[in-house]
Length: 153
Image (tube, rainbow, N blue to C red; front, side, top):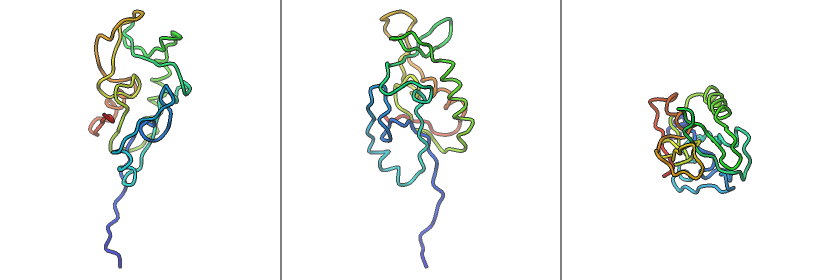
């Protein structure tokens, strides 16, 4: 008779570029010893919001800019504003997500960053003027209050 105990595996949301896929803007992924060790003990729920809204790999970078009193997600090289697409994707993803015990998000990402994302004024070649959360990361924190949300850094 086995004395090993069986426990349900926690579900953890994670930015897909952390150890799981080469989906960053430049086609890279982020290595993480912590995530490699964690994978045997949890069920990871990967997400890449930028790929989810149809931006390819590789892709021109996006950034958060303050425009008209609000924050917008913009691809400076094309001028494309993907704010509405990101909000729609994020809400749809979170609506179908189900229960998770936490999130690990890509630090400083304008989509996934949870805390330390550069925010720019709406001017060409301007330096960032503040820091905050990325659009997806912010919505995760708002909608899933009470669960830990960390970044890989």
